[in-house]
Image (tube, rainbow, N blue to C red; front, side):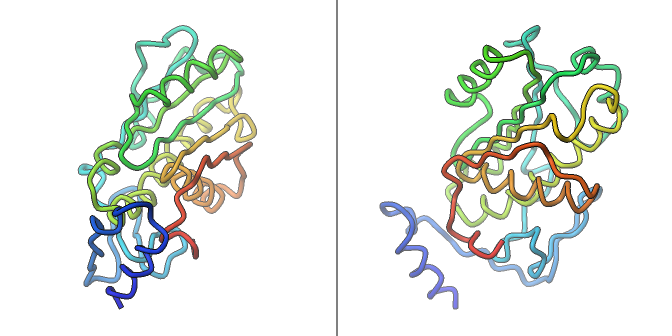
Length: 218
């Protein structure tokens, strides 16, 4: 079955990318992490062929930018509601943008920073960059794909914290999530997890050239 998968991947991935892929073998039925819950092979919020790495290994960070701090972001914490309280940037009602990079990219990649600056030039908003470089930079595509489910849940929990703390100035309709490549799939997991947890939909999700291999049934 794994050989057949690699042949199928070879037909859809560019260049010799498929040669670098190693199918992840998971002998257990699930992988569970504190706060995030369990990732199961038959769960639509999991990539079936690859459970995600641990949160410590992926080490996702959430720098927050605004017109007041374009080059000196504040670091948000997806784990703790308390550490995100009393932030002056959320005292006024304004849109919230979230940018999620893709495979072999980083939060400080040129296009991410240019997109952040463009959004801030267009309107007075807050911009969160989802930097999951340590889960996205290694050569195993399937492993990185599996990590998108974890990063999506982390981002969902962070948004839930912020919306709970700043309910007077921030609502789900104010949130626009923008993801590129595997970041587009992170966006999808984020939106579905947020809907499952809250019963609410985010204002807008934009997937730019979202990665397709392994996500046909998610």
